[in-house]
Image 1: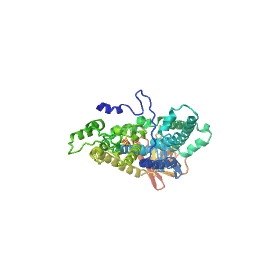
Image 2: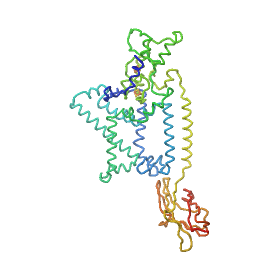
Image 3: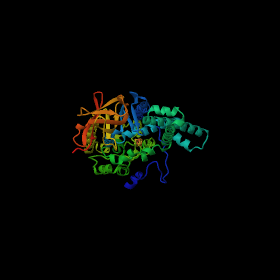
Image 4: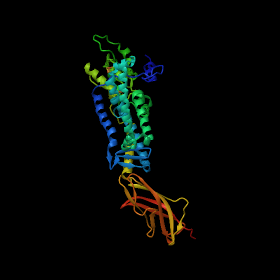
Length: 497
Ligand code: SF4
Ligand code: SF4
């Protein structure tokens, strides 16, 4: 086999045939140590996903990502559009974290945490195994003509799929608009919530389509994170990998089998680098292996939800779901060989036995990430309880009052970043004789929790306070004895010679 032929599997994805048609994957039901632990992790994550929208702190949701109304709550702390710099920095930190995590741990996230994998493999696929049976039964069912059994199974399966898709859609909406609003949309007449109801239907339809039809194509062809693997992974990244040093030359497990021709076996089955290494070595230095531990049972391929053969090497399609590790470990147990022929390791770990993850690239990313995390902590710790914007009223310069003072008019917006209502006062710094009051408000102005108040502010100064036609003034916004913000602006008066 030429090197080009050996690499030909990379020319197209495993789920598309030569004519460009989708190849439907029927992965064999996985079982084993890793699958069990992934199931436990998925229970915790699903409980969090479905339960978190119901948790409230001071009457507000613990998390809210209302992009429509630009209202965000994290751990009960409201964030506003004024905190956009925090958002940008947090996103930057997240991107660097993802890069660092992927450089070191490959697609660990995809296999263990990604909602797409969790729902597909731990919810929808399990229901499919329960109704349609394992891979072979699923294949038979797909090929059989429409009869009572097929109709019953299809109606049951897709009925349950749609019900779960509706539940998932409602849950995602609850993270965006809050669980109370979702309950209102679901329980009140549709006419009152046309937009909300349409969003629910669209989300439900999208989730149903993704989990019943698109499936692994999301990870293989759509997800941008998956596409990034090609530039993020290197030979030191820990991924689900086949130990070709130990496994090759592969061959069927047969009693009294003929010994393979070692040179031919290596050329055919072992990676280029390893073949070169082994062929260079003398039998005294490193005896050639006649038979590797892989018995070519292809169970690792049969369980793969993306339809690839991990023995071909690291591939973009691999979501690190560990199904092949479990399948191969079970085979190794049966043939009494050590587990881990397919395991978490790096290419260099396999070839050279090197385990270090601290490469210059990783150190560089770690330093940048540490700096970003410190910046995030400092900005969060120094984030005030509110923010104020005070601007001069457009088109208004100054006015002389009946008692001979000068009056300027301003527009203000005060943001309350706390979870409690905030009574506020305005003070003019360094101006003892100033009069300052909110137009149209006689009592104390209260800014609702996590919200904003706006209005007009009137400031009066004695004429003697002015030395020119404009003066810098500092307005302090306070709530009790706490400063909310301090704003610098101008006060205008008549021109003086
Ligand atoms: S499951 Fe293990 S032994 Fe079987 S083909 Fe895959 S790597 Fe080889
Ligand atoms: S190769 Fe293994 S880890 Fe990767 S997607 Fe397939 S079964 Fe999962």
